[in-house]
Image 1 (cartoon, rainbow, N blue to C red):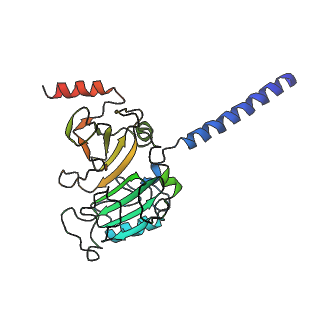
Image 2: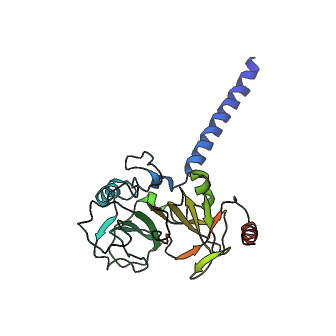
Image 3: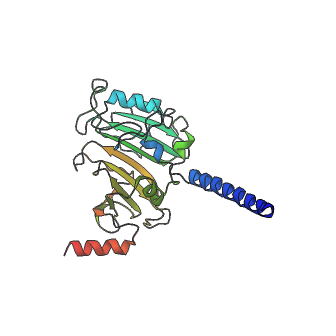
Length: 265
């Protein structure tokens, strides 16, 4: 028995080391997008939500307060009304307020209180938010902007589509312009994933030059109060939109094309 003691002890030590390693690897590979779906205190917010903001339930005043309190976005600079100094790559139509910061990316958090009304801040401060959009472009801004938090900076070109699905679960549908598009202004690497009855849309772009369900990286995110075309914003700054296709898993694009061909017969 004494002779077995050392080998058994050694095995126990090895097992403990492996457990610690697996936990460490799991932590380092954790989807960095998940904090977006939390309240400022770190608790999960009721989906569909973004930073604790629930379109259709949260007022503009409450949304601004949540963004200022949330650790991910508290360092961003608030813009109200005058967006002339913001990088022109973004569309600000119907935006109520913007929060902006920069690192390698210029990050813009846009809050919308009405898709049809003209700008009328602050009289709209108690209106309900109808959409919230988080997007970015490569940092080529000459505007003096605050640095974004490291956690927010880690999201772009770091979170793969496959990693996101492992955290959020499979989307109800996806959009692949290269398979079937409504309109494509340029390129076909852009894709969208739809969650929560199409009230949450997350976009991805490939770094390989063509769509790849295993590799596409996070580009932008938009949460809506109403899943209707008249309300829907193009979540990605590249403005490329495809027809929503059913989730067929991590299938090849050819499988999705085959589904489309069968559906239109």
